[in-house]
Length: 251
Image (cartoon, rainbow, N blue to C red; front, side):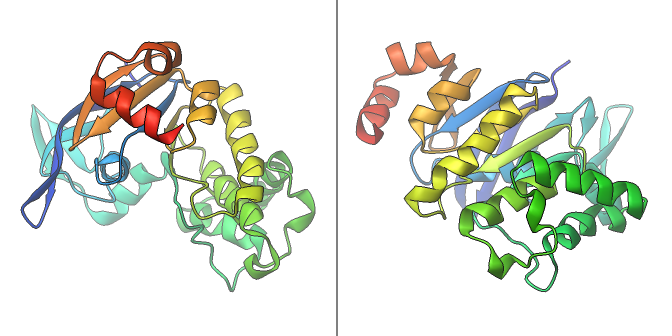
């Protein structure tokens, strides 16, 4: 059974089709990198996987459970918002912008989500400090976001996602809002997650990084998956001309 199973996913905005019947399987511990031009549906795919966007058709399963719905005898019924929030906690999301609460310290930012779902404070704080150490910010637990660089804020955002204990983590161009000299420190944290066996789906334009960390590379255009394969297959011999043209333009 796949950690993430996407079937027939469709989504439109204002009559414009953004996802057009997407199928995707992600195994536990697999790193999938999604490439494609702007407007190809990459970010919407991630937002539908964790139900930040409600699909128009199709479904997403994570660890066998349909996200956003209760399934009984083949019929799907929408879950109430609090139940969806609990499901979403199992699918971590790291955005382009850091979205940290500016009035909370780094540690408080990490505690906010787990405590809202009923976690025990002392154990969660201990876990938060472990994760801050993992992302290289052990000494900044009491700092406020404004006191951190962009790269440090994004590393806090990654730790905040991990403290929920997600089955999978979705990363939507996690370095796009960073100055070039700060990109490397965030990518290094993501490399560590990949090496540690965390299930990851990453939207990025960092093709060198994708080549290094991906188990599977997916190329999207016009709301569809054009092709997918291992990094050597995609970067070394993509079958589709559109994939080859895209890679030639971004290298």
